[in-house]
Length: 430
Image (cartoon, rainbow, N blue to C red; front, side, top):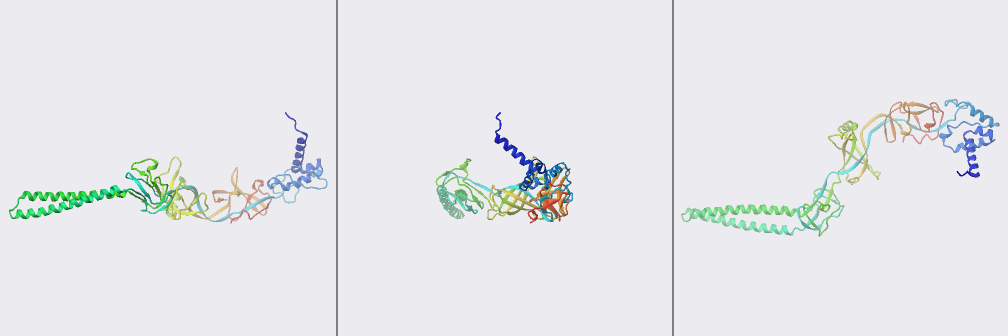
């Protein structure tokens, strides 16, 4: 092993001497007169929590003797009178105010925006795309033409069916004239009954042909409508897989088989899961006030208000949660499908609630407690925390709501310790 150099050794000795002068200034004065005074001055640069636990130092002409006496003296009681020989210095702390008033009962959760309707547009015929009527990502109204397919063939078939209908109508007129003529001849005993029956049969046949022609034309017109692909809902168009000139085919289940997808963005759902023990409170809130929901999209500072629209009819036994949906008008599309949102579900407004800054609550073997400031002294008081909300602990037992509590510096305190308030306004209620 390599031996440390002389410089390293001297540096270690110097650090040890300086540390000793800071921690035990009285003893340091005994060995190195004046070193304790310098060590005590260095305490001003240490955190207040460390200064509170270091031995006290009172310099005088024979500082060495005083330092020895302090080193051998028993620890001072935290509530010893100020100025007494063994009194600890006051501990610097930051305080905050306990408040009493009305607070909303809020549940925080994470949700995902979901469209109320999603439509995948597919062709029902094999045809060539004639033109695309909208741009990708555009907002379309119901009935807007998304794509127009080449429909010349079916239009020609309609014209052919209409011509057949006209022919059958003419045949019916001829048959009706024959029926009238043969009936008149038969009444004068100048014709035969068989001719009249044949004419009536021809008229009935023409009537049936006309009905078939009309049905054929109606069927072709329905097919003609398939060549115009329109938006069935109002929403946003996604990526369009086929452009003008491409061939689209019915029954194509590949990625290109879907011409485009439209999602409804206004109104919109935000789905989230709720622990089952909160379900009774949620249902009571829905019946009373509608259970307001505030959604803040991640990456945004804007808050959008909605309300609970749907609670699933069954709790998931594997997770102990129930699926819930909130609905938002979303007229300006502040929520986007698939977007993560931070949610605040306001169940009700609780009256006469005591709350303190969350940092004021300490944990011990016997539960939660706080230090209450009384006449410059910190008094330990046991409290019961109902819940934590928005950076504040809701206290159900132990405080009245008008106390001043220690928010920072509690780790250096004991019951009855004297304190000095370092910045009383930094942690008070706004």
